[in-house]
Amino acid sequence: MKRIILILAVGLGLISLCFAEDLKLDIIFSNDVHGGIDRAQATFMNPEFPPQLGGGGSAATLIKYIRSLGGEKRASMLLDAGDFFQGHPVGTITEGRAVIEYMNAIGYDVMTIGNHEFDVNQDKLTNTLKLAKFPIISCNLIDRTTGKLPWYVEPYKVFTRLGVRIGIVGFTTTDTEKMSFPDNIKNIDFLSEKEAVAKYVKIVREEEKVDIVIVLGHAGLPYDVVPTYLSRYDAQGTEKQNDRYAAWGYDAQEIAREVEGIDLFVGGHMHKGIPKPWIDPVTQTLVIQGYAYGSNLGWLTLTIDPETKTLTGYESPAIREGSMITLFEDEFIPDEEIGETIAAQVAIAEEGMDEIVGTAGVYLSRTNVDAQSLMGNTIVDAMRAEVNSDFSFMNLGGVRADIKSGPVTYRSVFDVMPFDNMVVSFKCTGEFLRRVIETRIEGGRHGMIVSGGKVIYSKKQKNFERVTSFQIGGKPYDPNKIYTCTTTDFLMQGNAGLSLLTQVPESDIIYHQINLRDAIVNYFKYHSPVKTKIDDRWKRDDNAQPTAEMKY
Image (cartoon, rainbow, N blue to C red; front, side, top):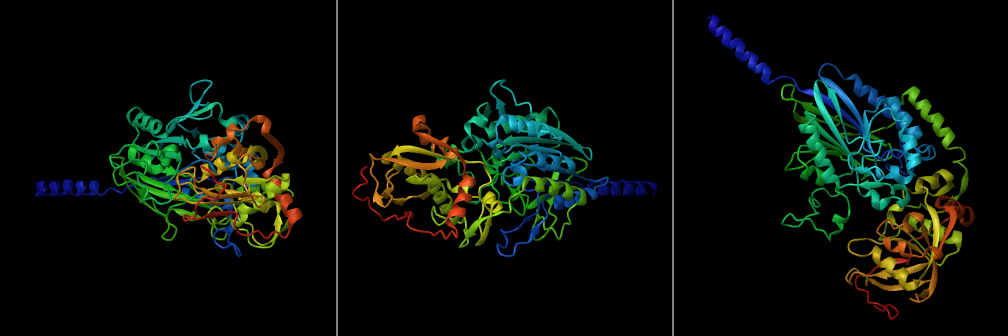
């Protein structure tokens, strides 16, 4: 009998062991905050009657709640995937200091570097990063003067939670090279994301003996996850070296598929949140990312086997929002201390921003119709009017917000143009300008926003022979005539695929020392009410044939 009881007891023990309760690790994350620690209105939900968002104060309330759930079998980590300060006045004007101070106060564990961190020069960036009381990680940045990682980053960091060793590897998208001012990154090399991440995942697995690997990368999932899966490669698995995807850095989907040993990828850069993780069908790596501008906080609970210390699955906190928790102020009453500190910094940064500078006679949306939007057209019209040039243009991604009809404040303009782009003009022949336009409609590119001319193009024509009609100032363009064109210093330095502009001789460039925001403000001051239209300045017509002046 005793033997039977002993066997039964051992059996029950084995059953108990098999069904031991999983450990829970709450991953709290932000990405692409862009200075959005202040209170804001959720105009993306309802432009006319937007709900109130609580910013960093509401985020602090939610973070403290999640941490309160901890115990012997539950812990948390707070991560940020980069682009932390450029975009809202409190971030931009303080050069990120207000955001870092907030992150220190709420206790971030680790952050990686985004491309917009390099919107300022290295001295300004490093002065801000010095304030961080948490590690900053990126494994693919190299200081050209030393050949090593810049002093302000580490390639990875190892943490212990609940007896589980967790290795977090960070990286910065190599897209930064194509999206930043060359002077700001002149001393930085960006190594291949795939190769650098693979190297350090192996190190943390084999040398650091971690149990769980998280990649914290400033890169995200493509908008159409399934159709674009491994779009960088042909049917044989060979990378398409001439394909437009290969010209850009590896996205989160590609890293998750091609680098083994990653349990979770926390990303960003795309400004598109996903309610539940995308899981790579081969590696089973979880990939998660949030929205932008501090509108939400990510919360994903990893379940971990207490014996093997391996990932067993995940839980999402909300049925409706999944892992993306929108920071509605009435749901998450802002933390009093942190909320007041942020409000004080905002008051200083935003002094004078509610001054009315003009009126919008229509709702100026940034939604594109081909390569036109009411907001985009307004910006290039403002650039051209400011310096009285023949033609102006800018990239589609340069428009960051709408302006609703009615009074327009400096704050409204700042939301549209949060980055410190400057107005620059240059002289060139009509033929050179045509080549600039052709560059922006080559391959799968969708064009650019223009003012002062009319462009008709056909995607059925050959690359660099797609413009079928081109007028400047109401007349057919003259390939030999010298025109004055206006754009931004960002594009003049060869960004957004316009390396052609770096060929313009310095003697033909005019630096007006005018901030693009100020040019837009002036346009509203002197042209209100602004009633921009979608007109015939830019048109795609795949049946169009070249006009007589278009000689290829």
